[in-house]
Length: 223
Image 1 (cartoon, rainbow, N blue to C red):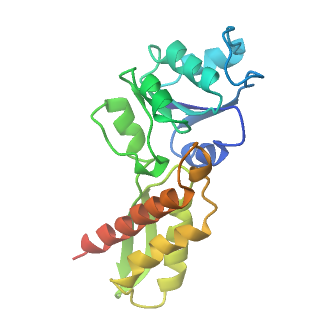
Image 2: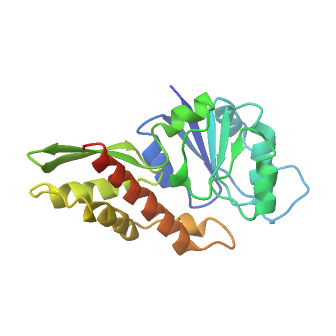
Image 3: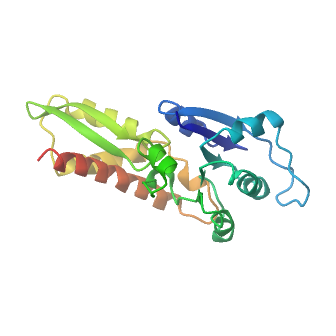
């Protein structure tokens, strides 16, 4: 089974862990950030954490300290199949991360889609840009199945809402996707807080758009 290791030095990553562990063998590792923002000294990572990271196929980094984040990339990029940087600050740092061919820095984690790398594609077949399937009986929604979930779990949150709202009535094909997108606004998304100089509302709007599109595609697939 695909092995995923989620790294954090703060408060982010726990929701991704709860979602991803349902699909893949997943470890959640809390690392201690250096005391300063930029240090020239070597960064210490416990041996037990190193052993777990070395066994990963995919690393997902929610590390906010730039030196620690860079150290993870430079130390482990050649040992794992792919590294996803979920938390990054500024295009300069992004460019440093992505100087490694198997490192990507998504603008928002619910935009992940296949890129041709077999390990990465296996991961994003279940986690990333949302996909849902509507199970319809007698023109009513019997169930909403999440085929691919956003890492934070918001897709299941939206799917449950749509399922409950439409279980006893015929869905409005025009308004239902819009409702799904708007429902994201009620989920406590943290995406905008993970990066410096970014617009939190813009990220929420993108997440909303991804979920609206997922339900639009689900409706079209039934025609």
